[in-house]
Image (tube, rainbow, N blue to C red):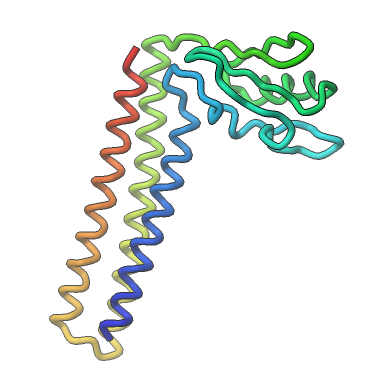
Amino acid sequence: MTEELDLIFDELKSSNEKTLGHLENELTKVRAGKATPAMLNGVMVEYYGSMTPLQQVANVNTVDARTIVVQPWEKSMLNEIARGIINANLGLNPQNNGEQLMIAVPLLTEERRRELVKRSKTEGENAKVGVRNHRKDAMDMIKDLKNDGLSEDMAKSAEEEVQQITNRFIKKIDDILEVKEKDIMTI
């Protein structure tokens, strides 16, 4: 029975790690005033008739804290890439110089910073819901084991372990959000 419990704990930790990874990925899309190539991660570009991620048709770098440079592998793609960036609704306006696209990242207003913090907190809340759903699944598995003969004491301690794991991941989410909020609100 303890092997089954260990599997439940491992599965819970693994699922929660994936949830944390997803949260961190989503938070990279929330810009904090500094230009990063990750800001363009969701941009899709029409490439020979099919929608393709920007990173597969161009090199994306930052020159300084306020400028992103997009260097396409084919110069004929400049206009398509610019259209893709505009259509992604990121509030960015690429400038085409014939060789590459230069994107000046505008300074964030106080109001926009608050919106971004709110969006980050929403992502964090979604992650917490995911962690709680994983907890519920683990508790259900423990309940099933209890019906199959797991002792009352072992079930109780397993449920406590599940709750401790859940609490640790909720704390990690709160810590990640706190760092992101500081990052966004720092001018």
